[in-house]
Length: 196
Image (cartoon, rainbow, N blue to C red; front, side, top):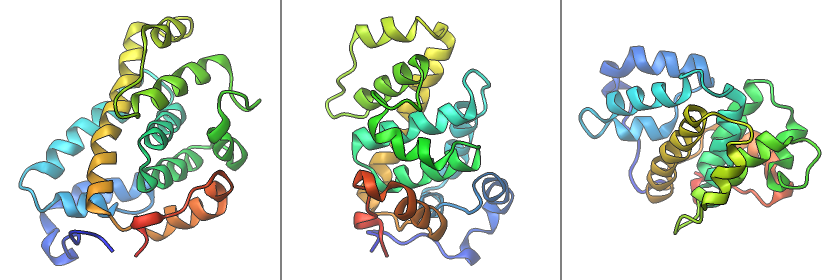
């Protein structure tokens, strides 16, 4: 049960255009955004930041979602794990690869570049942050500084989302919840406090 309920549809009319775009991209409108709508200007600010992080073209969209999932795993946010794995699959990442994200360090599904990005994401999601200069040395074998900054921007955006959704106990929507139960459960995922 959420700590604060999302606003009902009749109170979200001013966000209709933005929410239509989000629904087109994700397949649903996240309850987190419906709760953010309680704070004037937050949906718009979040949309602007999210657009810059998700659509900058510096790293592939599928890698963005995998980085987001691993940083959310590091932070322990089940809501964001379900969302990002669901979105990665919508972008063409196989269910097998998504399920293997729990073991990205050793799984044959990941190459050195992906491992470097996912390693940084996992350590960035820890509290306190456990990233090191060695993580950046490894990243520079595969990515430019602009691309590394883009990876860190994904980690940082999901730091906000992880904190928001875990604190609010945001109720998980049906499609990412079903995906998480089907694909992530073997890795220990469960909806936890995000179940209604």
